[in-house]
Each structure stands twice: as structure tokens, then as C-alpha cells.
Length: 247
Image 1 (tube, rainbow, N blue to C red):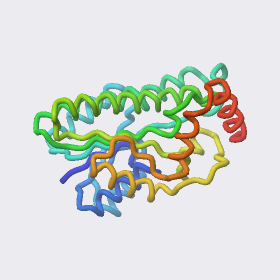
Image 2 (cartoon, rainbow, N blue to C red; image 1 turned 30 degrees about the horizontal axis):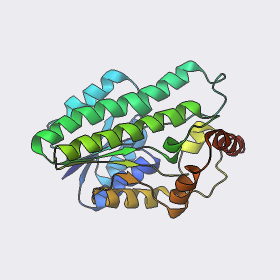
Image 3 (cartoon, helix red, strand yellow; image 1 turned 120 degrees about the vertical axis):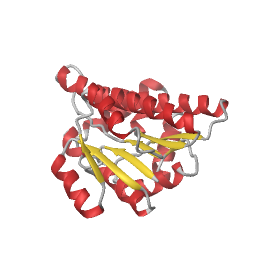
Image 4 (cartoon, rainbow, N blue to C red; image 1 turned 90 degrees about the horizontal axis):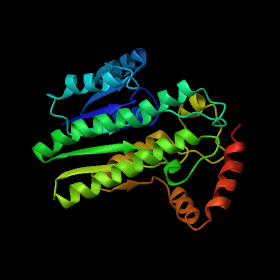
């Protein structure tokens, strides 16, 4: 059994790769940071591929390198966020975020899904966020990318269901997680963070049970539920206030 995990050098991706290895999967770990990948290779005997997936052609390259590996699980985890007012964030950084959070995930999902459908088996886990359920002033682009991941994944789920396919797709929507994401996005969460190891174990176990939307903690499930009861304009004010405290 083989699993391909992107963004596997740190955080949730690293924890997922390690947990899958403990379950007996041969892991192919993908990330930009070759040094961190080498550490994983030496410690866990992962096969590693160092690629920057924000570059479009590298996603097709990754597929070409692994399409004959008979992958059973694809985990699209690579991504990053950025904090600040939309007008002030450099557009180059936002385009890079869209290329990684959206375009890379879209390409890899499509390419591997078609192979999974041919053999009528396989799992795809796309990593989104609690951010997918609302607009996010001060992190507008990041929230938008995660909404795309959620809506794409759930739509594909229904198509597979209608086809009575044995291929399964899930989308992970965690709240704050104690990872390097905070440093990259330049934010500090005021809510208590969950560990990446807990999120990894919970999400993989739920994925293997064919769960569609995976939300790791009751606290976040309740937050999503009650946010749906709040009028949009009030919700935007609340989110802005919470985001502003991250400065």
C-alpha cells in the first residue's frame, strides 16, 4: 500500500505521513525543503521528492514520477496563508498562494482521481480549513482558497457517489493547529491550538471510514454550526475582530 503526501516536511502533512507509515503504508513525501525531507527519509525510510508545487509544471512532473507507483492514498496538504489587508499584501505572494493552495491541489486531484477511477479504488484527502466556511477579512485570499478546496471536494464526492464508485474523497477542515503555518502567515492564534499529531490520526481514521467533511474537534464543529446562525454582516465584523487580535 502506498500513500503520496504533499507538504510533508512539517506540520499536518508531516504528521499524516508518519501516521500512514505506522499503519503500514509506503509513503512518498513531497515538499520544497529537501533538507527536511532527507531527515524524514533517514528516520522513517520515506521515499522523497523535492518539488515546489506552486510551479504549475511541477505538479505534472510529480504525477509523471509517481503514476506507476500504484498510489492508494493521495493527501493534498501543501499550502500556506498570509495575514494583512487585501490592498497591502503583494499580489505576487497572493498569486503564489493561489497557485499552491488551489491550482496544485486541483491538478493533482484530477490526475490521480482519473487513475483511481480506472482501478475503482483509492482515497483522496484534501486539506482545507475552518476558514472554508466563512469569509476572512485580513486573510481574504487564504480563506477564499480554502473555500475552493471544500466546494471542489464535496462536488467530486457527489459525482463519485452517483457513479457508485469505490473511490473516496474527503476534505479536512481543522481549526487552529500548532504548526509552522502561524509563522509563515505571520499570525498568532488566540484560540487553543490542536496538535498536528491528533489531527493527522483523526483525519486518516475518518478518511478510511469514507467520511466526507472531517472536523477534528467538537469545539470547532460547534463554532461552524453556530456561525451559520449569524447574519453575514455581523459575522464579518466578528471575524474581523478575531483576526485583528492575531496581529
